[in-house]
Image (cartoon, rainbow, N blue to C red; front, side, top):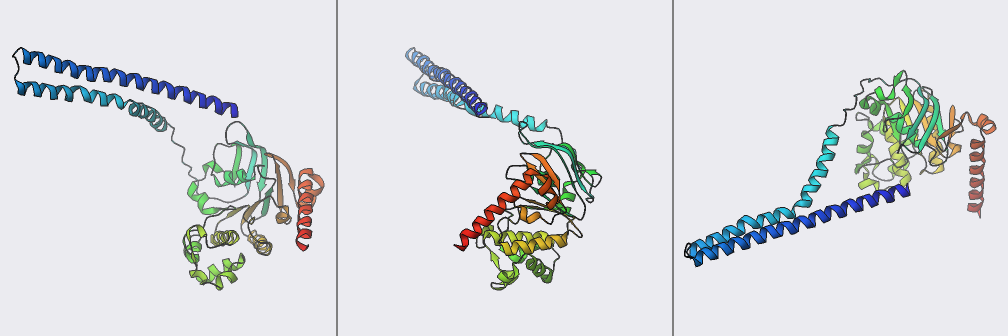
Length: 361
């Protein structure tokens, strides 16, 4: 990639120098024509004055006309680079206009098992971030995708949410290919909560009502209780507590819990939590995990996490490493059958034990 970037930069430099050289030559030619033409016109005018064919008024008139006729040609030459930029821009515009119209998905129903079969994906058409993945997230279950950073976990979420396209293989929700489901249906029935979910300037109530516009105050407080945020807000102005731009007057964990409460208010069929509890304290995290266990009774819950302690109760765990699926099963079974999972589990346990002992000291 480094060599390709260098080659591309060199091509750009050569092309830029070529354009500048052409512009310089164009300006020189235009200067010769403009100033030479004006000088020639003035010379002929003076000769006619000397011969008596023109009076003083005629001489002044021809001098002004010479300047007005030839000097704009010089200004025209200075716009050469503008013309070149316009040509380059027009190519981009025509390329966009010639782009085939994307087929509009028509299916509006979302429901059933989520099945990814022989799924592969590459962001740059060079390195595959997913390689021949086979996963099934059963309807009304709590499933998880785990692995180290960069293993392709978040790409799974983006494919299900249809944030990215052009995957290879099959991805279905129920019996319908994901690419055939309308974006409106996916936005309504698939909720994705990331680790940096956004909250908006305004009151807590206004933020929560974005999840469900007809929610009552009682429903809002119930959602806040589930994410362990209610007691904190009761010490302030309750639902009327004002958030500053980007929620800057809340901590990262508090903003995350507010975003989770907003998601829980949504009556969606599928919930995807992508490292959604990574910025939350342990007490609140455990409470939220209990809520997810209740949620799976009526919803499909997918948790993407690098922390294995969060997924030990999952009905199905998929293990990724460098885009490859290394194992699938429940926690105890994976400890025995999947070396990657076993290594991650014991490494994290050792780190937690070390951190706990260090804090006690």
